[in-house]
Amino acid sequence: MQPQLRTTPAEKQSNALASSRKADARRRGNRSDYYAAYNRERGDTWKARAGTPEYKARQAVARAVKSGRLVRPDFCSRCDVSCKPEGHHHDYSKPLEVEWLCDDCHEDKHRKVA
Ligand SMILES: [Zn+2]
Ligand SMILES: [Zn+2]
Image (cartoon, rainbow, N blue to C red; front, side, top):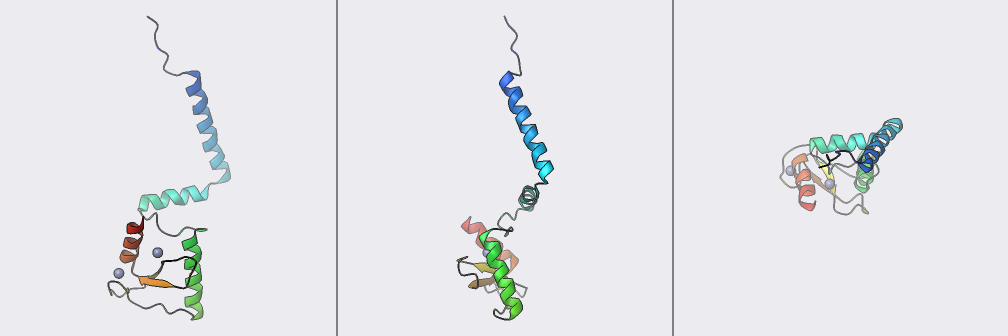
């Protein structure tokens, strides 16, 4: 009876490939991966990340609030809790049409959609 070898040449090669890819990411300083992992850990994967449509829409809201085009209420439009609500978008192509929601309600919205 022949003893079975645990590591086949093919396995050795794929291991080498994986570690070189990891080194690659380190060299480039892969920040987006870092933030994605950070968001996953905190459980708020829905939160807008730079470059996403929601992120751009929220930037537009922030600018509009600053310039006075949009008025941010000081309560949640869903549960009426007094807070500094976030603008939730139903359609990112209409960045200034938002529903003002507290953190909890906003998170809820995204959980249901996702
Ligand atoms: Zn939202
Ligand atoms: Zn609320």
